[in-house]
Length: 496
Image (cartoon, rainbow, N blue to C red; front, side, top):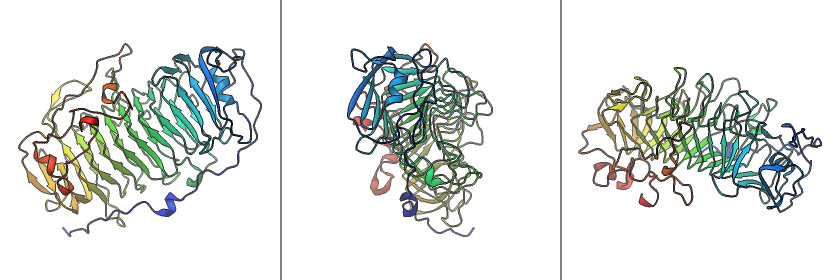
């Protein structure tokens, strides 16, 4: 086989990164209407011009629509959100908000600014819950749908929406320290505000999902409910950092691109974890569910995604997959362990599409490993763990797992799993690479889900896996990376 050139990965094209956000002027609005319960309808809009007003408003479960919005006299949450403008901060007091209707901020109707964003946050992180259990399944039944610009959402729990829990259709929106679960589509999704937006320049861009957890989302078909989705119609500069996706009925992350709409903007995923996807915490799953940890494309459309310092384990299908995206995908310091729980032809690493122009993907400091046995989460039998990693492009200090054999590529050099000469050098590890392979968990909750908040630092919500999948400093893997560094991801907090 003819030896390929070593791939050189360059930063994303400047023309893509400089692509403008949706610059559509703020439109005039309709007056706010109220239902008999004092809640504005789900289609309410507000004012037309951005006039910053630094102001704090309070809401609480059961608050009156005529409340003053003060701490002692909070206002109804629907009225509060409908009234927000640039510079406003809405604080949700602790409790469960019975929310049968979606919160829908229409395109361009409630824009903040970079200096004066619109803020919605829990008074105490994780203590204010938007519960949409009464909503019912439906494509319009999203929980919190933000299609205006410069919003900041922090510390909320969003559950049981009839579609997405949080949908981001605007630009420069940050969602931080939120937990979304039991929704009937992807927990947090980025996508265009409306079908009239046909060009990538009009699609949502420069959004950040930070330190969020999305789990146990499940739709009736089993094909749509991912932990996080940035797919189909998304612009540039969208970032997921410090996020955890587990036990979602489909994938942990879905970056699907579709031929009808063309390429999406490159997405960056950093410091994130995906596990147990393809089956819910209560054990139910569907044959139609994919069950990938990180699904990085679709329909053979080339997008240059970046994945750094991420971990995938115990997913029913692949840990990391291009899903036909010819790339080039840049993947650095990632750990993939004991994936392909259900699929015999799935792997820890499945990034093998050949792009003639780019000559493949770029792998750096990758650690793929299988322990030798696995517990199948669909029928609970113990089976042999195997992974025929598919990798193509160039590798720089990487360990791949191929047919119960560990291969090391020092590099940087061309790699191709189909070629014995480009697969790497086989070696037998002296020990298991990890300090611990026991998943830290606090046990089942009353609703059948599992509490994995132990995976986060309680002070700042960053991920802290402790000794789980931490590379043993006594093993050879601790010095096989570039410049004698440790292979794989480091998500071990203060103990890392």
